[in-house]
Length: 459
Image 1 (cartoon, helix red, strand yellow):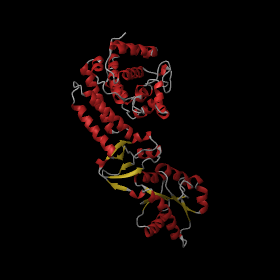
Image 2 (cartoon, helix red, strand yellow):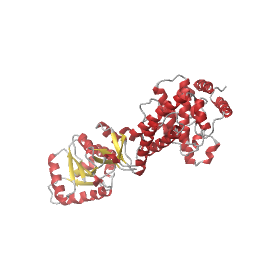
Image 3 (cartoon, rainbow, N blue to C red):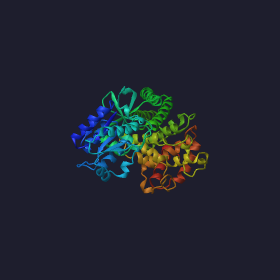
Image 4 (tube, rainbow, N blue to C red):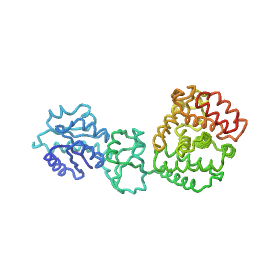
């Protein structure tokens, strides 16, 4: 196990090293003399079972440093040392009571009982540290057993369902954050300042399954012809895996890769079919659900974007990716067809699920923020249930704040919800568009609806 000592006196380093080496065979003492070195050591040399902190630092605030270390690394004991009055004056009650195993070692160190006093108090802190398994330290691993995630992805959480590891070398990883243990943004910021780009998650059976299935979907999306009617089922399967992966783990390079190939596949299929009605007529209606509606939305939005002469790759991609991610946080299958926060259909679900449903555009937008290569993706998704008459949800902004691309996604998902799991019916299409016309009669929504009607040749 490692412990970190912070002191400006090299003489005191030697005293602690001598006594700890004499009494504890399994402890490695790391000594630093500045705040910067202390935080750097905590970031890359740990994990540390506990800290040994000089309360009388002259170049820094010892109390502030102690609080920063705990915020960065999580709760663990601190062994404070110095004259009694210095510890009492410089160390706050908040810091001293932060862990029940915190202790004090009083100067002078040349007293007869110092070695015994130090041994007793180190043993007390060791008990806590061993219970927390900090003795694991750096482990040699097979990198293929771990999944890399971009550091910025962890800013969305304050705790994570899996242990988080830092790669020291290509084969040596260190656990820096334990599963389901709170951590702070400053913890991540410290690693970011050290130019750490990725943290790593160990694969369990579920994660390994998602990795393997994602790879299979990517390979199939590359090879299946856009003319093949089975391509729709492949795309639905790929979206299902995408949703499971993101919800389980967040946005990784695998997710970016899968999304990229899904976007390419949708564009290729739409190009080959050369018309939205062709897609609606041959789209498989024996399957319905969140993934299916997402895909159908992508096709409708692509067609409407083309109608509006949005021909850039960025515009096409934003429409498709926002369609794929829009319902990722809907709590129950079946809720994805509900269009209003006051729908009587919500009575069929629990109160918790209803609240999650009302807020799901905001929750989905949080995932969309990680797709930084597509500007405004989170804004589009967050507003996809808003209406120009301010009867949408969850925030009901002014129609002046809703752009045409918001209108495109909203109208597309509305129509997709009506036809997901349903065979194409021209009469039903006419009726649905009449209902939509009553709700979207303002500004860019009215104009966009007009283009959708022209596209489908419905008055």
